Length: 189
Image 1 (cartoon, rainbow, N blue to C red):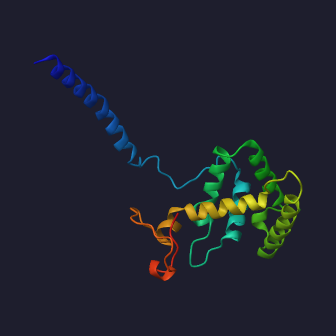
Image 2: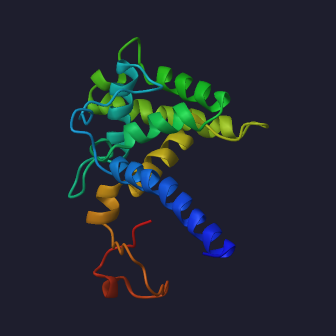
Image 3: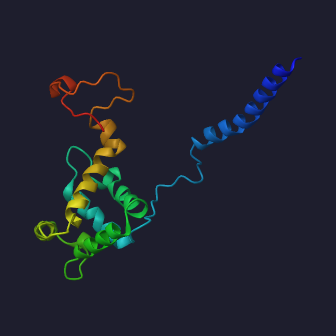
């Protein structure tokens, strides 16, 4: 055997020995561990009372109709993860203060009647709109929350796959087609 062949064989042997465990690890990572899979979700950023208030808030923005409500598709979990892992401390503080504003006269937002919730949310939106007119204020709790709710809702698997047009392997994209040609639904994100 010549030197070139020996180096090539050694390289192949090294590649196989390194990649085999990596492939096994990757494939094992794709399978859920039955002992660890649980339906219980533990918030990273909020406490239980804040989770209940946020659930009522998101379901008020996107209630259950012929499509699932915002909380049913995991918007509360989405917002908790965004707040805990991706937003700066300034936005986290704004979020916590906004959740506190949801509590009317020391009553939790989730325990208020539907009419009280609607009135409180409309008042909050008016206050936030006025605060946005002030110099130096870029975002408010209410506008940021509405954006996060809609984003989380539209990015959820349930909505993307079952309620919007979904093509897991997209081919050609034509953005100027009649809605009826697409089955009467918009495309998933």
